[in-house]
Amino acid sequence: MKFQDGEVIVFAGDSVTDADKNNTYDRIGNGYVKLIRDALTAFEPQNHYKIINAGVSGNNSSDLLARWENDVDAFAPDTVFCMIGINDVWRHFDGLDLEKPLISEAKYEENLRKICGLAKKYKRFVFITPYYMERNRQDEMRLLTERYVQVMNRVAKENGVPVLDAQKVFDEYMLSRSGQSISWDRVHPGPVGSMLLARMILKG
Image (tube, rainbow, N blue to C red; front, side, top):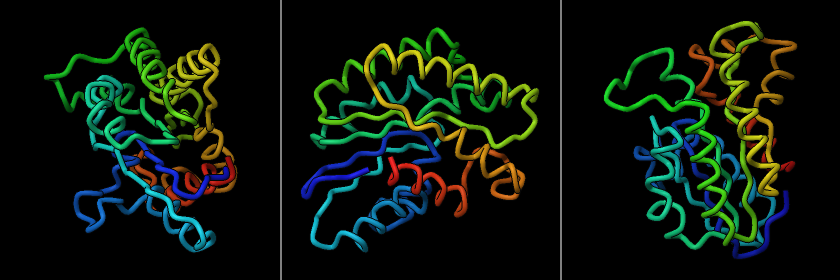
């Protein structure tokens, strides 16, 4: 994916995007956003990009929508990548945040539609699907993740928004190695998974 000199590029999402950004001096994190920033700096030194990590660990789609104005719009971005949904799925299984209502497929769809509405002002807006690094297609969390991916694809198609398929990227990797070889919880990508995500985004 090509970018223009001077572009402001925002990556919005949850912990996969966040990647411990609050503990890095530049708030870029240690994940795929950093890899993209470093690749653009190394291979396009003639250009200057402003890269913003707008991921927040633990966020679901409602959380991201609530902070969109402050964390995304405030930077007047040219391009926005949005990867959100795995916590919408995960909380149905782990019960880690009982104070928040669970995000149903219908609510997820509603949130994504609202995000698409907010994103109409940008030059480029791209969804990235949630994913679950599990080979067993009958696994409960894998099945529910795929349903939320279907919701994202439907909303994206109706709004003319391109989608990068992260699940497909990890499925191709898992033809040779298990998801747990990357991440014990099969969600947080670690160094290898972050590289796969960065390559997917840069290839577009």
